[in-house]
Amino acid sequence: MLCAGVLASCGNGANTPAAADSTNTTTTTDSLQHMVLIPGGSFVMGAADDMALADEQPVHTVHVDSFLMDEHEVTNAEFAAFVAATHYVTTAEKPISKEEIMRELPPGSPEPDSSLLQAGSLIFSPPDHAVPLDDVSQWWAFVPGASWRHPEGPGSSITGREQHPVVHISWDDANAYARWAGKRLPTEAEWEYAARGGLAEQPFTWGGEAITAGQPKANTWNGHFPYENTKTDGFYNTAPVKTYTANGYGLYDMAGNVWEWCADWYDANYYQQVPNAAQNPEGPAKGFDPADPSAPKRVIRGGSFMCSDEYCSGYRVTARMKTTPTSGLANLGFRCVKDIK
Ligand SMILES: [Ca+2]
Ligand SMILES: [Ca+2]
Image (cartoon, rainbow, N blue to C red; front, side, top):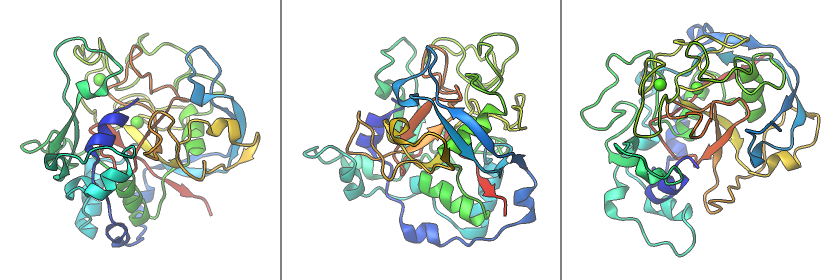
């Protein structure tokens, strides 16, 4: 799915624990101002409808305790404040370790070309014609110099996009930010529970109406992916956070805009293993993607500006996606949660 092969072949660098640990754990009052209370409860996780994929099944009951959640994705302005305070350097801004890449490739794979060992990230670079939708290399390109500061590579900037979600953020980067803010990443169960906004067993954050019906509901892909985007929702790339209607809990962009990191490892078979009525499940002990077994991955949720009903449909509340923890992507960001003491 989402560029797993491209990620494996390009890698995205190895973040060092030392870099992540260089941040402090200061909690600012400001960081709590834009969080909403998600009241704890039990819900049916996963889906069994016609759209449900195998890794969303079987459905099972889960309980999560109450928690606070960022009302919107972490923005460029918020991430810039973190970097200004800590001098943190993201994964995409560091040269790539060949050893790290080789660990994520199948045994016996050839070593990557040295051109792929520069600091950089994957940007969306679509063709102008229809291509097979099972070949992600058709629209992803590794660009040296691409990072959260330069989302489309050298020459691009985040000026004027301060309220857009930060992108090209690895799982390690997201955790470093969360620690600094006195928060953490949501578990996959917390994320799905929150995305549902209090609705039971509905496919979308807004209920059951098709995404193409009525007013735009989220920043997704309109038209034929990846070569034609009619921008019915107003945006080709990322949109400012809070552009579209919030869900029942007051959370914005839980569908679309950018994918969001969860804390959990991704295991395609996890729902077959998790006990029914699990309390605050934290995911499997290790990652397993049967399509790419040499590269353990973390869960990402919610879909992005690149999802449509003909490709991906990642904005469904139960849709599961995954990528390697060191990956940065032009359509991947995060939001944080905080425990209630
Ligand atoms: Ca759009
Ligand atoms: Ca999102």
